[in-house]
Length: 163
Image (cartoon, rainbow, N blue to C red):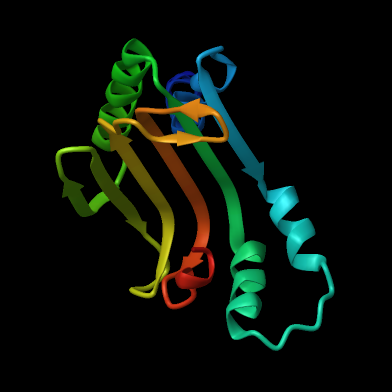
């Protein structure tokens, strides 16, 4: 019996880190621009003692303390973009994310997904996937495909402060 439990644990344990490693492979690719902010950085931001009169700034500090990670991966390479699409589809098939909204026009396709949090006002993950961007440039870099993953205890009532 112990042997069966051990085998079961060994097969299930790698799945616990699946979402992290699935997108992290893009971080080391030369033709991918990546931004990764971990919980330690959010904790540091939330500990900055600033007296703020602006409610949005206060909401931002509250949200920052509850975030676990922010990951953004962009590329203009069509092959890597196809690999990103495959990774997102695979992740969506294995996770409990639900589609929040999608936007399609001649220049881009944008899809937002969320994973429910502790109640209706909170989400534990927000995933945005953008494809087909044409002629967009930021800081001298063109991009066509974007993955944005935000995890933590995200209060939807305060999300406007992040934007």
